[in-house]
Image (cartoon, rainbow, N blue to C red; front, top):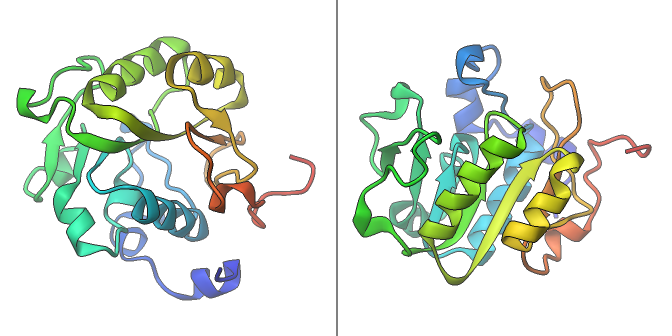
Amino acid sequence: MATVEEINEKPNGFLLKYGEGKEKGDLNQYWYSPYTIDIMRQECEAHGKRIAFLSTPSIFFSLKNKELKANSVLFDLDPQWTNLPNYVVWNFNEPLGYPEEMKGTFDYVVIDPPFITEEVWQLYIESTKSLLTPGGKVLGTTIVENKEQLDRELGCKPQVFAPSIPKLVYQYSLYVNYESELFSQKNPEIPDDY
């Protein structure tokens, strides 16, 4: 696995275009660090064949596997993506507000809601359950206080790897509903006292 320094030396195309200082506060956008994006991208490419990216543009646009990217869809409210392929304008307040033919067609869902409340997570959970194929995999990031809800509703467990989100004032945890070798390793960007 590449080091943090090696990853950070290579510019991330998404962050170059939409990153530093370009997060939209009104949409509660906070981008992951380049290293975190790369680790999450690797995990997605190792486990998914058709991925629904719910409010996770930094991971979707960083995919290197062209076939996977062509088979996957970004669900988001930000109008800047409207003219891009594989984008669905989606408001989490209408969790089933996406084309009906997409229901049950994704083997992997990546989730990072703009808000951390239980109510918002419940809307994302409804969407996730609707979009997933039976036995599908889930990757989500949120605060540790949401651990029980993610376990109860999606079977997701906290991982050793924690995402770095440089502009966020609190630390997120990362959750998946399957065994992950990559996420069983500590993120060197995160202090040891976390």
